[in-house]
Length: 223
Image (tube, rainbow, N blue to C red; front, side, top):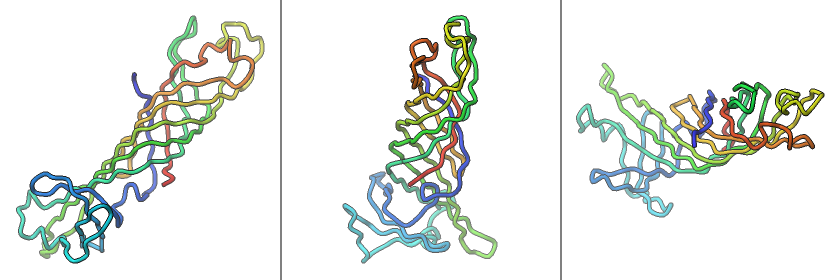
């Protein structure tokens, strides 16, 4: 199934920033290990950890560690898995053609709660300055896959009821579906697939009842 597309630009949150906490890191043997990260200004302290227990007796300090490495290896890659809860606004839906009605775009405002599994990746690079200091640069990539559910509006008319309905009014729909969200630094691009159920007596004559749609979504992270 094709996923519904959406995009959003959101403010910095703990999801996009490297904050103190537990992460996963691959060692020189490409084995994934758990670590505890403590960013301090341009310094980065990484402590070994096992089952959320931090070993404070030893740590790796960056950028000190990078000075002995080549220019191409002066970076650290960290991963973090978490539960992702968002508020989604879906202002635009694309519906494919039905019966004699051509494909159309609906611009009613729709709101939904999104819940999914999220994986974030942080790539930390230390660049040497002309003053022989090391400046930290962080690139963030994230991906989340989950479900959304909420309510929205739809314009009811003879056109989308196969000319059975004589009047026109704004109906309320329950929208739901699956969504995937890709984040690159502060920019978020969402992909999802959804369908609607009309919440009144005319649901049986609405030609889009239970039919899939594609749309744009703007998200705000809640956790």
